[in-house]
Length: 213
Ligand code: B16
Ligand code: MG
Image 1 (cartoon, rainbow, N blue to C red):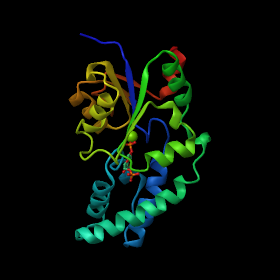
Image 2 (tube, protein in one colour):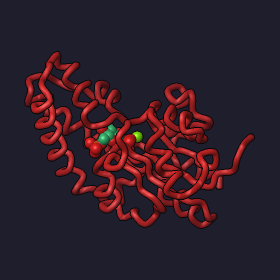
Image 3 (cartoon, rainbow, N blue to C red):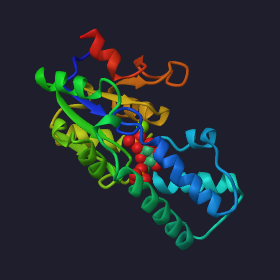
Image 4 (cartoon, rainbow, N blue to C red):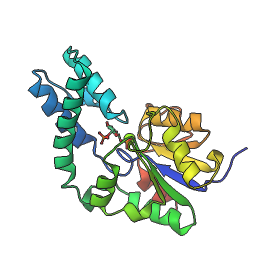
């Protein structure tokens, strides 16, 4: 049975704003400081992935193996550089159609939520000036299991007291689409149908949904 959407849950990076480029610059700077290079293609592997797991992938690329204390120092360093760049974010970096689509949903009485892996979510929403467009924000500060685990999306549904089958997740990463499926929610992939083949619907960006009305 197909249910009409009552809650729209949005991933942040890649759906509302493209912070991947700033993650990339910080990870590349870290790799370079460790004596190896890190390409944009490598960065694709980090999208939607938690901070510590991202470092582990980066170290794998550089052929390095470090203890937990050293890894914690490196993730802190990367995050300091990343926060430095996102502190300069402004509204012009909101992805096309995101604000319009959120306003449309709220006008129709549909609840909105953020379901992101990023611990920097509050800062990013604040810099973009869109915190008030979300009824609930669930992010890396409140979840213990990373996508494809459904925890982040289930917490959002729970906070809004709506059953998962009435929720739809908007995601740019395969792991996020898988998390939506495991949560028992519908999914809209943001990106290419080739990569997001398990999504119920795929669009190039939220602007396409604004066009459809
Ligand atoms: P932070 P999303 C994810 O955001 C990013 O795609 C991923 O590259 C990043 O490592 C992760 O957040 C954690 O971010 O280091 O800021 O806590 O796509 O889940 O909105
Ligand atoms: Mg994402």
